[in-house]
Image (tube, rainbow, N blue to C red):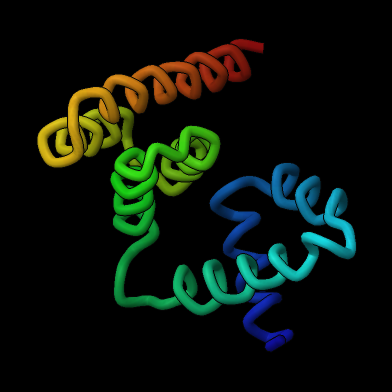
Length: 129
């Protein structure tokens, strides 16, 4: 493994998904899934998200579309929060999910809109306290 890419990936992963989320994932890793945590952090976040050719907002919107299309609700929820942290607006998230409806199907979009509304409600509640 490449420790430099891992550290870069860890920094980006924490910035996008939140340090608490990432630190919890790493702290709960065991001998079985720690290699996956390292792989995801190093290659996904360090090698790909660490590239400068696309801004993080674009990468976030791409992730939302792909995760919605693949029907990955847990990851979609996580990345909606990340997209908001990266500066993607709720209106932009709505537009991505409308695009999903056309190209991936209405059921995928319906579920994705529901998940987005849950994330928005959680964030609004946290902001009010």
